[in-house]
Image (tube, rainbow, N blue to C red; front, side, top):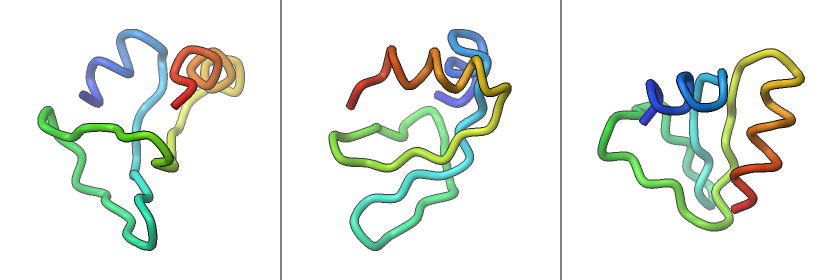
Length: 56
């Protein structure tokens, strides 16, 4: 998943907060769910583009 986000949007997914739990073990089987809070790293413009596209 992280490689896909890097290729598609130019951002790196660092962690996912789901409820009170923060998951930093991101792999190809990680599923992003509605109401997840995503911690990403990248250029501000790329993060803005990602936010527009993902709209979870």
